Amino acid sequence: MVVIFLINMKNFIRFLFFVSAVWGIMFLAQMIVYASLAKAFNFSWPYWGLTLGMLSTSYLIGSVIVRKFHNKFSSFLYFVVATWLGVFLIIFSVILPYELLSLIFGFISTQTLTVLLIIALLVSTYAIFNGRRLTVKEYTLPIKNLANPVKAVHLTDIHIGTVHQTKFLERVVSKTNELKPEVIYMTGDLFDGAVPIDETILAPLNDLEAPIFFSNGNHEEYEGLQYVRETITHVKPEMLENKMIMHDGIQVIGVNDRQSHKKGENLRSILDSLSLNKDLPTVLMYHTPVDWQVAREHGVDVMLSGHTHNGQIFPFNLLVKFAFKYMTGLYQEEGKFLHVSPGTGTWGPPMRLGSRNEITVLHLIPE
Image (cartoon, rainbow, N blue to C red; front, side, top):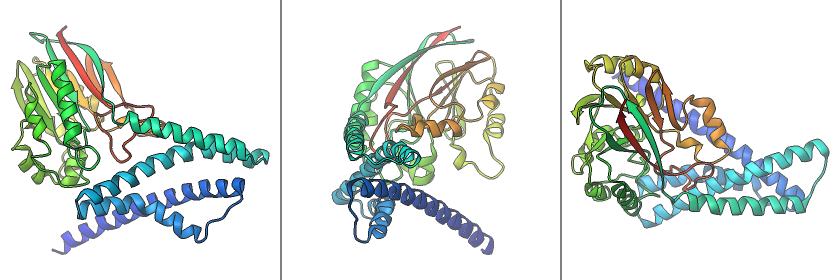
């Protein structure tokens, strides 16, 4: 009992540290923007520190409210604060270079700042529109020992919950059916984790016209894997948790996201336990694009991942590149493939800038 308490306390302290760090970064960024605008346009907010503090916390508060009181008002509030977060990040991205140049060269230009703000708002409008679009990307992958061609679709990071709901999922299903795939691989973060969702919201998945295999992402872990298991049983996707099945002559493996691994468990130990046949074509669904070398060593021909969102909003895709060696698109080594989808939906700000919502078609052909 004492051990469990200490573990929970340790996780709680980590959570508080993370929230405090994020809040501090947001507060500093908003202070920079406020100071730049106040200096250029000669104004001052009363209680500006309190105002910026509340704005810095708005997304966190909105997330808590929508989780606790899930209704139309809380969903709208979450949409507003999530959109504001994205818009602010774009505003900050254009004002920071201006402020740095202003400090170096000692100039203040209300005209320049006005133009930058207009550009930021226009770009934000485009990003909101782009966050609703669905695009299709196609690749051809020659696979060793594959008997017959297979047309597969890769979906991931749809994030059904607060921003993306049944209507968006219906669009994803309709677009996918138009492509006429023979199999659909879904690699996690179907659940957003912001609000509890049930089988009625996921019902459009039953209209998909091909077999669907689903593996967990980190947001399924946040939602609660047991809850996810119970919900998925009511809809079409077959959930593969550290499990392998045969489908059309292909070994299809679903491995839980690394955040769901038990102590001492990792991709290598899980693949070791599955007794794979390296003479058969193999597809691995693994949410986070890491440990591809481990997958290759186990004979995995195609590893499918998501998670990165390709940064979702520029310039943050530049930061994501530091965290992930394989960020988006198709990679090939030693005759093996890794496909990292930029995601089919969005998380947090319902916006895309320098990235896109993608449904990926993979033409698997005999080598």
